[in-house]
Length: 145
Image 1 (cartoon, one colour):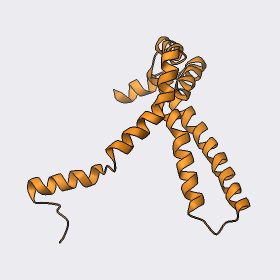
Image 2 (spheres, one colour; image 1 turned 90 degrees about the vertical axis):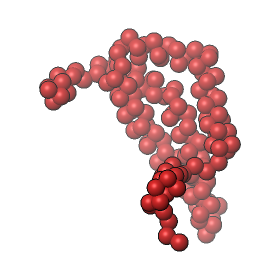
Image 3 (cartoon, rainbow, N blue to C red; image 1 turned 180 degrees about the horizontal axis):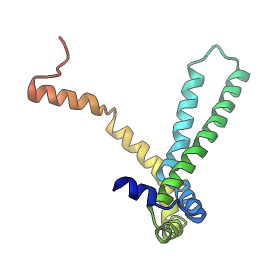
């Protein structure tokens, strides 16, 4: 039955894919990717003090080029995923909303809000926290002493 539903599902229309991409381009992932790229590129350059200034600039340029290609793939995949999961009516409405002043201000504030959240919360280690809580509750999976 599931296979029949999957096979019967129509591929999204070109309009849906375009709208999905527009929606992806204004989403949280799109707003966070430049921050991630900048941080990781800076860390990469800092990890190689042996490079000349010209080589560091070339490494930054390579990082930017690789980032843009990866970002394009992510936005295309996200757009297609939206197109496959949302109706054309919903996509149209969401794209219109994303172009509104309130949505644009939200999009602009999102990276800084998330950065501030991460700074105020500090380091989080979900797996480590789960194992520590499990150890405390059961006496199992405790680190060796």
